[in-house]
Image (cartoon, rainbow, N blue to C red):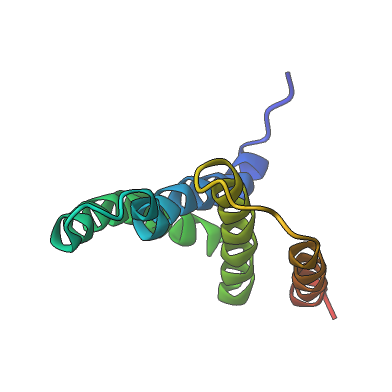
Length: 119
């Protein structure tokens, strides 16, 4: 199997940002299934989950900055966030995925094109 260390290092930020966003999505929205739980408990649990999120997000940006600009890293993070949240909202929160979300995603992909294009 062909292994390219440089290619792996470029892919690693995407993997770490994805893991980070999974944690952050649960920290921000996971409690919506537990509305009867006291708010202070939800806040403490969310902060604990957010700490784990930072353990992946900070290295993702540090490593990613070797290959991508800050604007590119932020754009990747936003796209990953939307994908993770879409899956989360359908599978975990049992919400409907609507057609207008796809239209919005199309425009975000268009933004990605402009941000990553070498002009």
